[in-house]
Length: 458
Image (cartoon, rainbow, N blue to C red; front, side, top):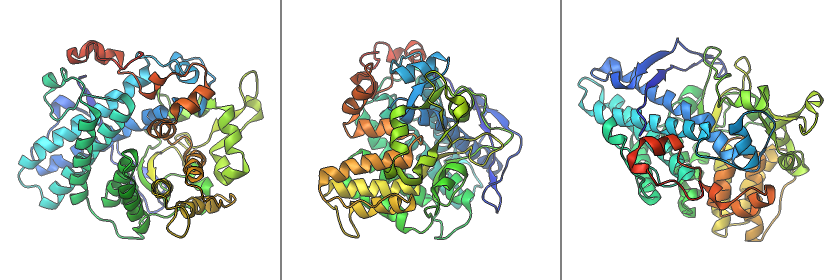
């Protein structure tokens, strides 16, 4: 397992406007020198853990949407050509970046879980909350890791020598640990009152509803429809979050009322020039652009105002460039350069899918009602389907309209068993091996326990 070299700590303080973010200068902490000996050490290490989570965000969006049918290649970089042409290799730098970011998050979470219980003088309420946050972060990273790479090493300590020689652990075991960590987090994360206007509490930092939302997604992937419906319903009913009246606010603003978990950037640290910067890839260099198929979908009447996810500029229209770009990820000086990891609309879609799979189709507590909440917000025509199979497919389409370029598409197609049918029609290069990303080649070379253990086909 790669030795994690540094964590950049950044304190995010949201002002009353809910839009401006102030941050102090970054503080580099060598992981080998992380200090958690006294109460004053808790906050810096805690913020380092949140920053580690932030490091996973862009690569997770790339995994979810670049691997699938949302993009076509339009640039010069080999990594992006692999995504566009569906010829992904184990040497792809983004494959490596996400792996490293996930295990960096796990490492800092493990450090807190190992060390904080023995630190004297920490208020018990603080200790319980930060330990709960560490459980959540480890669960989040392992969940993404196993659904991206398959069986992954289960790292539960900060012993770096041992961590460099851990083999692959079965997904079922990883997911059991994810559930245990989420349940531990749920018990001690703070509750937030309905109608709270403190978006830093609601979206930047974890609370019980954040964990309920993550569990709703967990149970959806597990096909535990009853639990997915219940957890998503609890988040919806909590009153903490509200759908924005105008979908354009979801695209063009940070820290909206429906944001459940969001990672923020400021003028001083926006990753506008990094290899995985979404603005750089999607808007600046336009290394990848929305696929023609997705454009047709998003500009349809069925999508309603969700078409605002993408925009057209005739000056970009040349050769194979269709002139379209993604609008969701702005520059450092714009008000939409954050990355939203969960928002309320997803909870409606989770509940709709769970209800549809249980045969709860019509009526106030049916899947169609949940879909129409989002369609009404988007000024799209209401649907009136009654057949279960039709509603399940309607949920899939609605997730495209509502969640495009938020990192869900590839994971959705794989978990529903639809990847081969959809993706083979999209690209002649698609094969079933792309239902998992490869283990990064550098990890295969550095970790003896991974030698000869690559995913099939890579």
